[in-house]
Length: 524
Image (cartoon, rainbow, N blue to C red; front, side, top):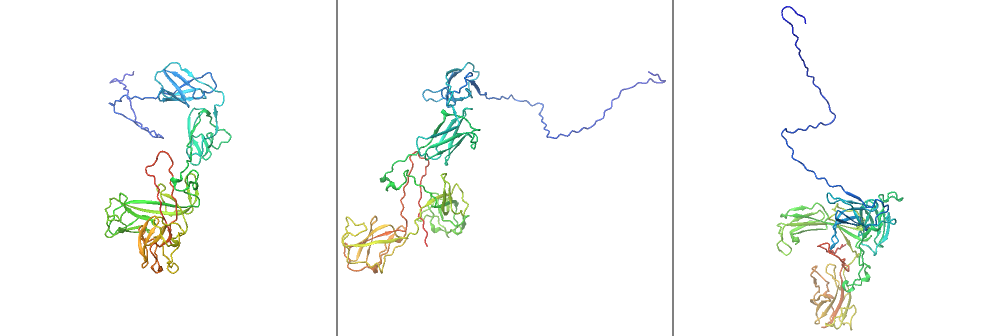
């Protein structure tokens, strides 16, 4: 150390620091989590399911186990094989048990999904058969014991030979059988012949994707339809005129169909108000109350071409007989399209020959079949006279009994008048009670009125408000006497039709099963 004059010199260490900011850039998202220093976590418990337990039953065998032959004991329980499913705790009274696992017949192993905890001990085989042939198949052809089958009623269950998985397939209305991704085939409902292939690719014809199934475990069920003889007394007509099974198709190619939809909306009538229904060209517009009682048609006017309804001024909420209605009121409007059916499929789909003029909801639109007769009109025919009318055994045949009368009616110059509105299909007799008076008698209706030759005879049909027929007074000649009769027949403008309803035997499936007939006609 150097000594200088004056004061001694001391060196002092000094540290200097400089703050240099640094910035790092991350390419992703930075998530920062923090918690308070006094936070405490509660204990959490997780329960893990026990893994499946696999047991190799025949480690020294190479042949597959015969289905249904396996019985073994383990842990004080007896396990039984049923179609690839292991059951334990069988009830001797009901033969029911608890499903606990599966059997792999090809690998000769069982897999338990549920088993007692901490269970140990050896497996004791009580019964187990093996087979070295005819175990698995990839194709199956068979015929059901009966035919025809109800469409879409066939179900097939198979067990895979490689995984022991149970696969179920079913047929659709077209006869195609599919299920589980490996069942592909067809069923002929008329003959009951079933053809099945088991592969993962239905287009594979070489068998590369074939899946073997256990032949003896293939099961199926189907509904076989049987026709029962029909009684002519119950039907009211000879059953020879009906198909053998009693089922009459309601849709055929070339038939006339009526496609219709009825829309409903709740309304509150206001005097003089006009309501637009949202669509036009309705076939029917009506108003009913909550009980289905119709509103008096005089209380509203409709324009079906424009789809309008106008309430009366004033509007009275009453039925046609003047009784009160039960609100709320519902307005119904029906549109319909008459067309020709050009295609009928077994699935129930029908094709039509002309496009629909409306876009109608599929789940509410209905299709009805229509029976057409062509041009029809009412007529009066089979006119003849009888000198004596027997009240006890009246002559309703189409030929006279005994001699006719000298007196006649001039049909040439004064023909009887009959209209479509009032005519019915019936047999009539004008039975004279004196030289000028007579009773009007119909075979089923009896005496409906009285008449005389000095006035037109026009008995009113109460269903339509129009005369059944009109016999003009100018046509009557003289010489009539009590007991004489004039016989004739009439036909209505409606076509004749038999209605036979067949209900298949079995448990009822619906509460409301009904049909509705509507008479339609177009006039020139």
